[in-house]
Length: 225
Image 1: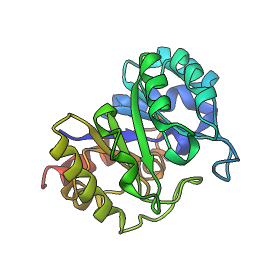
Image 2: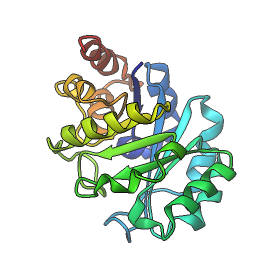
Image 3: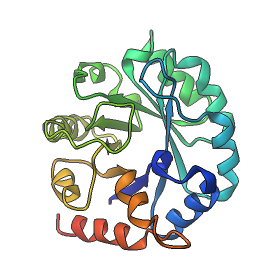
């Protein structure tokens, strides 16, 4: 019912392959892949070559979150590199429906991402074409930020939209997700949880890095929902 998706933005990039293998072996479900362009957001991260490099290391789904503008140019590159899900921000596309179609044509599942101040009306005409909706509970661009509580109300509103449309759409949350708030977030409607620093920082002092205790603690909290 619930899926945990560690964001490799917080991983040790000097040992990225090991970090991915270890986090999946520790019970994670999805690899969340944050792409920032220093244009749409004020940071620069990783591109399709890194996605291609990690693809042979795991059978887990790679969930690519594109924080880039314009978005259409880079979609085929990530599809070719092995992405399973590609999500984008509506502000980064001139034609949202066209971008969704482009992602699907490349053989990937499509997601739409909402920043804390982005209105949900973008869903009005495209929700039935989506496989994932991602609610940002921080402003995108940097890891380690605190959870914005208003995201809970947004999750509830999107959960109702998903239930009303009757389609199986993942509802993902990204930003400030921790053991002590994951249950509350789940009660608001999320079923997929991106966690970066909460997971990777918890295992950084062990050798090899192990993340099973923090992931188990998150699942224990989700079991109370």
